[in-house]
Image (cartoon, rainbow, N blue to C red; front, side, top):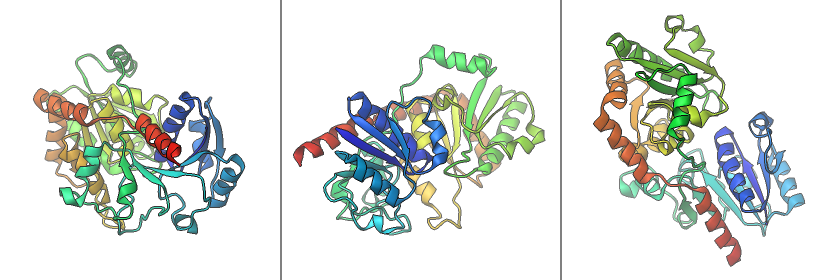
Length: 361
């Protein structure tokens, strides 16, 4: 069979790439389409499938017309949602599925999804998706006409926790000693823009903890224009990595704590590695959904898979939370057990549901 996998942004392209790899492993022909040329370097190093750019609805439709795939997967379901593509199905007979990392199907708000998709695969475990619904004291309501087509599948991409020897080698390469704790700090710089407040919250907390004798190092990943100007933190415990490191997951999984902006892609990686997580949420009042970040991450917090702090959390609260998730063995174990309990992989389930749908038509 032939499949076309389209990815809208950097986070979505990680979903698309993982699904494309799985389909290729099942001996299917795959074309992986990206919306932006800037994402090509991340996937052009030896992709096991055809790689193209379709930056407009017309380009995507032309690609579908020439390829005639058995199915199309759109990562995610708000692809070209400001055009008539969202309302009018451009190809009549080709099954088309959405792959989503958030609750884009909500009945109100500015992020309305494409209405005509045959299935919407949500890259959460079903338990987490359920916790996000208003009927379960969450924040989201799925329109009745869409709900039967929404299917939580588990995390995509799914990850395998590295062996201890691999983790130790990465830590040694970073200069982290056996007695030291390592915090992986992700401040984005691409799809979510630079979240500088994450650094302004974390670094003073770590500086205070180090003054108390806590041996902690911080590995910062993302756009570092701002942090490189923070001369007061220019010392041996602050490790900087401009842009995105090649083995992002390996370094994240080798840390003792992940301190990140709310991004669900990074969150899923930390959960898969059973590394304690602090999601630092902005609560931006100018956002059309000013509390969207909090709403999206709350189900994970309610399941104790992560801890939530805010852009304007008190410094002492930040310090205490960081210290607890680095040194309180009972608290660390509790979060790791919750992560193991709820974690599930999504690629295989998407494949099985998609094949079942295709065989039924």
